[in-house]
Image (cartoon, rainbow, N blue to C red):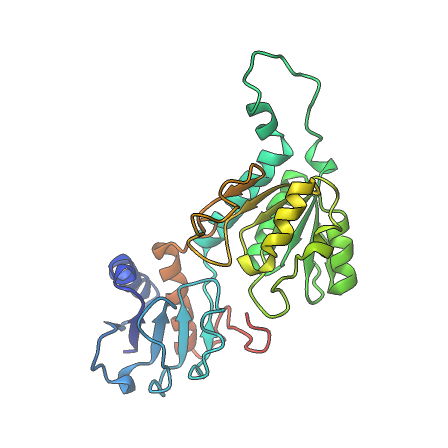
Length: 313
């Protein structure tokens, strides 16, 4: 019977204490789920279900732990922890993926159809001289082709958008133009009428979209960032918005969260702020992924979504 340590917040325990045991049972696992508490013998622990906001920071006593299974999609708050030597898996689950796809698709469609333009003129004037192009005539670039980026890019392509995807290393995806590397990034940005950033936080992606790269975008481009706040340089984005180089930015993630009340993003007329809700982890579907990985480990199979420590994701 594997012993599983639940090392997250008390609120997380409240959300997972019923659905996680059920998910384990559905996978045929007879496991003991132990909430984190002082005095726990680390030698008893074989798996750790973890959230960076939880109480566990030192993994070195857990010498028998076979894997650390994060409840978060991002691992930048844990991947540099030198006490963590166990295999680490990030959260990629059905609910999180669907939430991200729906957020991206909704905001892309909003700007593609010009709903903000029409909705801003409730003055009795009949303006029927402006119609949106078809989706096939709108170029959308998705930066980041991990599981979430691929799902978003495929959905946008399915709707009919002309989609280009960019990643650090080469990828090939049916129905998508895939670019990579520095030259590929320049090309991907230069055509992006709508730019969606779903990149992880790594040294290579931090400040990736600076003033020089924002200037590569077509004038009036729309930026959607549900990935990581550190990808965008805030001051450069504000300057590009003020100059009209960027037409609008929809931001779900920020360098400091919650976004400070005095931050200029809140009041800028060309910025839409959403409070880090694009891809929420849902306990029911996340529990299934945790149970799946534990079942795989118990069967001697490779873990899903294991983090590459060198790349940082």
